[in-house]
Structures are given as C-alpha cells and as structure tokens.
Amino acid sequence: MNPSGHLAKAKEIRQSLDRLLPDPGGANVAAITELAFGIAHHLIAGGTAAKFGQHLDTHEGVARS
Image (cartoon, rainbow, N blue to C red; front, top):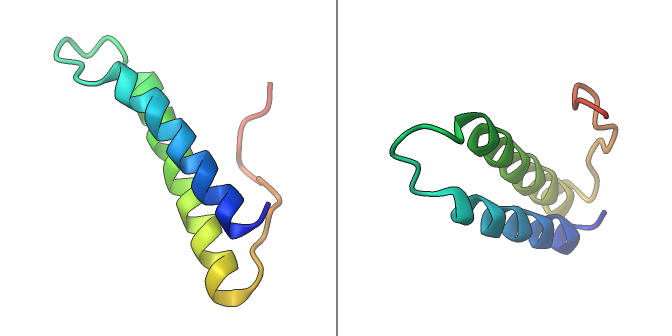
C-alpha cells in the first residue's frame, strides 16, 4: 500500500470511529481501542513510506481471523 492508500484507510477507519463516539457509558471501549490502533498503524506506515520510501508491511503482531 502506498502512502496515500494508508492515509485513505486511516480516514475510512476514523469515520467508523466517529460513529461510536461519544461513548459515555463505555459500551464500545474495545472497538474504539481497536479502531484507534488501526488509525495509528496506517498513519505510521504511510508516514514511514513517505519519508523513507518504504515500510515493513508484514502486519506482524496483528491478529488474524
């Protein structure tokens, strides 16, 4: 995935996150955490690719279904 692809995916995930917020009762804490992690992952990967021209796209440590 190229830097603009990572940015687009982060924005897409952010839209999903916005649907869960605010969450005053804490009913969606796990989902909010996972979505925030996904946003961070794509922003870091996109930034790394933009700055250095590459990033490790192994998804190591990411849970798979």
